[in-house]
Image (cartoon, rainbow, N blue to C red):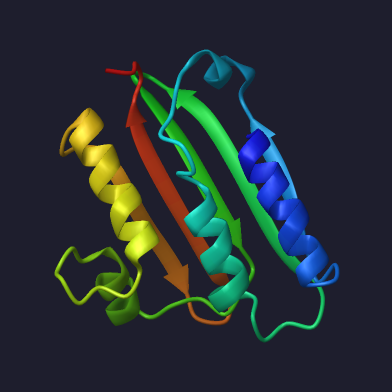
Length: 140
């Protein structure tokens, strides 16, 4: 969280306060390790792509919770959203993928925790995007 908050601070200065970030993390999550910088690519994409046309009022919410034997993190924004084809391209793992950061995070999670875990994207045009990142409840 320290890395993420420092990154958000820098981007807030760059974008001159056009967005706000809210954090809602279950304190139980702090006992676990996570891959370094796993949230940063999603915040970056929200700012560069989702909120890019907004002058002010951008909102990003970072949440984390325990659910049964899983750790679930979400990043939600109120940006312009994506169509299903764009979501498919963002998640694909072919060589020509443009979203290298998201692809790398998804691959790292699957390598560390197994195929059932990874990144999911829900989005609606002109409403926003919700990224869900699912980890196993315990670190390997």
